[in-house]
Image (cartoon, rainbow, N blue to C red; front, side):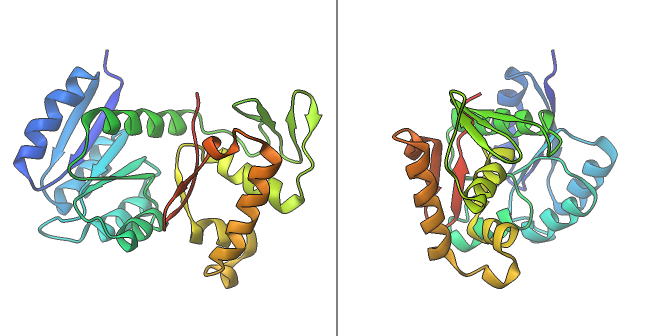
Length: 225
């Protein structure tokens, strides 16, 4: 049974030779694009369920491809690149990527990231829906554990709710600051760290495991589903 179609965008033939059988064995149908033009054409014509996108393409920078894909499609996109600079990761995530995996990568980790991204896409919920993360029940206006309401401030709750709606996905400092404090505060990373610290205290001893820090990039609410 095919679990979804995955478009692999990479100009390295060995990547396709490695990933095609691995994705097929995992139940996916791999689609191949060796350059940006073919990637955009296939994304529009084939409507894949997920895109694995390399940044170092011969005819266009991968960041530009990412922006063009996001202009017409909400498809989950995982960046697969040898570029390990934090600025590249942050730019890709800010431009709409769902995740970022560095080359060389472990196949098991990549498949886990793919499952998480597809699960998130399939479980997209209206803003009013109650979310369940670990032992938390996160509602639009309050968070409960075991029937008791946690004493979160409105800002702390908004931060947790935003992360819960994107659980499993890295949210950059810029994305979080812009969403909660506005574009004038995109550089106030220290301010965000204070709120993350306060939120972890409220959530208890398991919070450090629940809210993962992506050094230099942002935060990820772990998907325990």
